Length: 184
Image 1 (cartoon, rainbow, N blue to C red):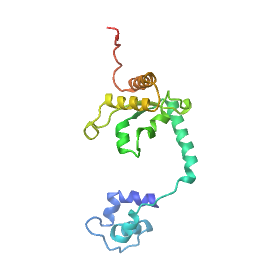
Image 2: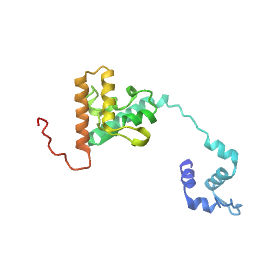
Image 3: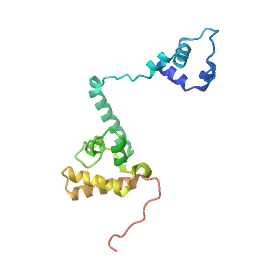
Image 4: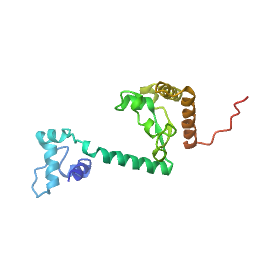
């Protein structure tokens, strides 16, 4: 019922049938329970407030199941070759991360001693430059610094970033790159 009620709240036809937003019609005909719930939500302030309250649901009992489901989803994505774009700086700023060490990319990315079966192809991106004021080179520098601060050598950090860069190049939707002669 809750799912249908939410669908009705987003249905202009259902809302108009109740007279919303201009005036709620006095119900002269029998309405079903769902229509009555919708009408009360739209007309009774107490019902509206109670429906807007956040209901916290403890997930501690479900943690093991959720971890296993995440592992299975990662395994499925890994098997299908889907590439996941990661925008580290914007993820850090808008996500619930206090520092980059908590970013999920370290658990899912290849080449960091992770379970090969559940590592994903990732590529690094930069988010909207206006609010985040970053560029792709800055995202890579941020990751390089994070790897070195976490105890990886500079060579290991460069090698990992090169691997991730290559995954990004393989996953793009543009034409293949031209060969580059780095010696000249």
